[in-house]
Length: 304
Ligand SMILES: [Zn+2]
Image 1: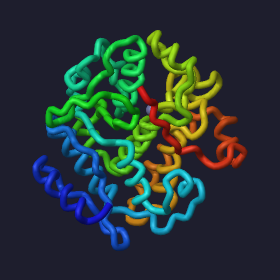
Image 2: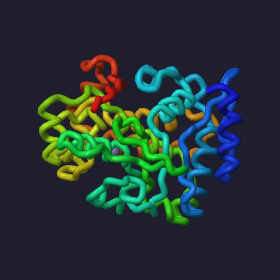
Image 3: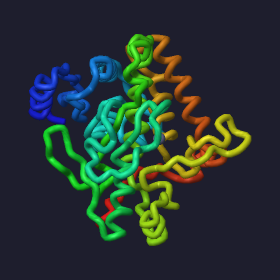
Image 4: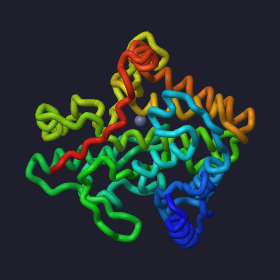
């Protein structure tokens, strides 16, 4: 991102009362471009500001780790910034009712009780497609300035914070900012429709069911029995999902962060292990061993 847009972000940030978040990268400037909800609670805003500033303060040096490079296309956190900017466009307060911005919503989204954040844009993309397949209008997202955007792509990139972002304790916990930015990375991956959808998926969506192709929005499935999270709907059974991408980010922080505290590195290591525990073990082995080839970071627009 060129410095001209950096200035544009600074102006927008000023309007929203946010700090301008950029750091020099070579001769370039990079910043997280997602628009933050003007209705964020004071604690949510404080957490996000703290996290974004910290994310842009630290560095990976020249990490040169093949999987990290294959996923993010670079060797530093600037590459993650680019990854985020392609996939996260809006960050909503946890206090927003789901139908306040999603004008056609009929059902409450699943409970966000313990969820750190939720890619609500990807969720509504699948529901919107189901509505269109039934001859109805597509769903719309009303942005922070009143513009209504038809939801026709999982790359709409709307993330809603979980209620945990309202916790003062959450704000104060040492070393947590970079872990929470890993939540952004995880949610960003849900904005990709990798591999697209087939006719069987269309039939399922029209019936109000989720597609069988889990790569489109990278849907989680029940964890295999006998694993740590066995039976819980929190695992990836398809390659290059949100947990694998998140684990790769956390590993980079844990093992190569420049400017990180020990607490931040240890927190990242725990997050990496937790992410890896949510991937089907043989699948994880196949990805790490190279048997599945290069990671598939592609995204297919679904035309409707
Ligand atoms: Zn997820």
